[in-house]
Amino acid sequence: MTIDEIRDNFALLDDWDDRYRYVIELGRALEPMPEAAHSAANKVQGCASQVWLAKHVSRNSRNEPVLTYLGDSDAHIVRGLIAILLTLFSGRTPQEILAADALAIFDQFGFREHLTPQRSNGLRAMVERIRSDARQALATAS
Image (tube, rainbow, N blue to C red):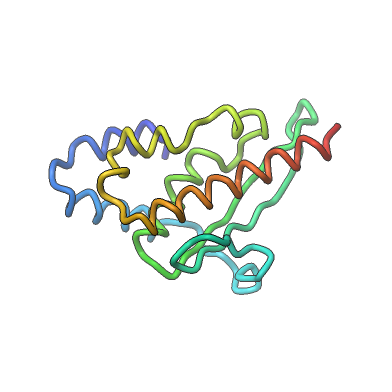
């Protein structure tokens, strides 16, 4: 699924209860994260819920680093937010990750008005973790 498909599906839902249900369904479709990946190193700090992001760095045909993620949370809505983030970022180069404005995309969906301050802070923490991984991958690649 692409971010455009998620955006289109989201636009079809007028009611925020339906939108929340859709986000939760996206979270249920996440690839399962192995129990061993629920580690302190993968835990995202700054989230009210427990959140884990496990990254794998590989190389594409141009020998650029590519970051791929698995994510999980103990909160259903947060798992859905992770699913949207991974649609945006997983399988991308550091340059693509750093060029994307995930928070602006979440604002387009209307999340700014419909997430609690704690969830918004957690979302920012997840985005910053992925951006930090991208900066680190760029530094290591040179």
